[in-house]
Amino acid sequence: MIAINSQGEEVKQWQAYLASLKYNVTVDGIFGPGTQQATIEFQKWCKIDADGIVGENSYAYAKANGYEGSYTA
Image (tube, rainbow, N blue to C red; front, side):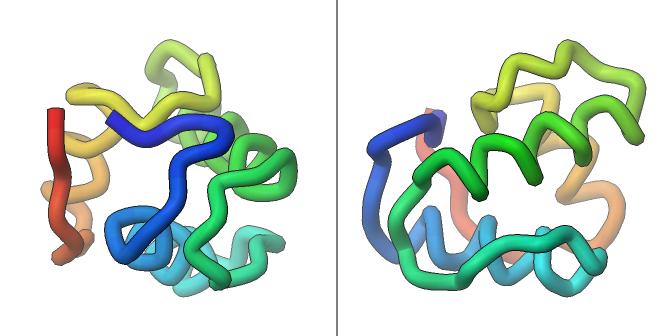
């Protein structure tokens, strides 16, 4: 799971995925408020629980739609 204040390569991969979908996010490896908001927008678009946390549901939906990044539960 990645959420607010998470940092590292996993976050950077998630941010790059969001950016590829044209969400306004900085790809810097730091899961701050901007990444959280972009994640919420992504979750709303997917019609899943929009909690701003990249958990199993967000990851599964993203993976089925081209996300190639890693994920740690």
